[in-house]
Length: 154
Image (tube, rainbow, N blue to C red; front, side, top):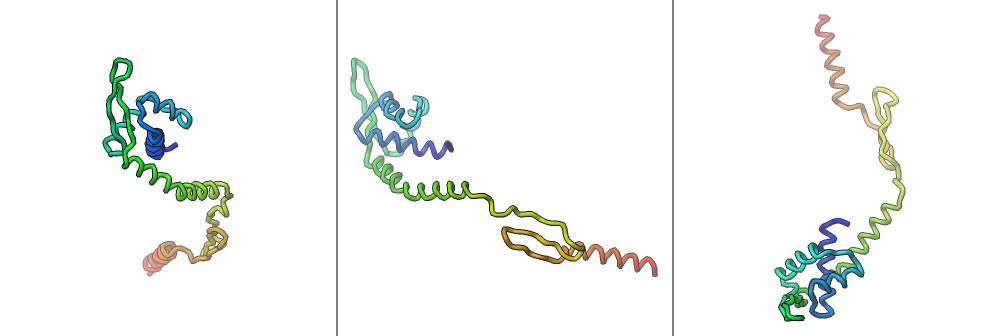
């Protein structure tokens, strides 16, 4: 999966875990394992970005004699979840489009054929054919060469 797309989706997954209530790093990883493998080295930078962006807030509480950092969803984080869910219809439509286009066979390959004579060329594009005159540069070059030959003879 594209790294940037995955990063954005992981952020929303983390926020979704926190929707159930405050949590701490290890427990967030355990919850996320249901949908994706994620390590601490991936999770903590995401948590930091989400905190800096106002999507979550932190607090510390003592647990078994030591301080544990907890993360809590903010209203900004909830808006981010809502925006992600609101984009789903558009994303589904785009994925469906790509899947449909990928399943189709190419209509006709674009191929250039050799000219039947020196004056015209036939080019196939899609299902249409176009006939065109030989390039102006080709005819200009040949007539320039003929003019030089005539000038040399005189």
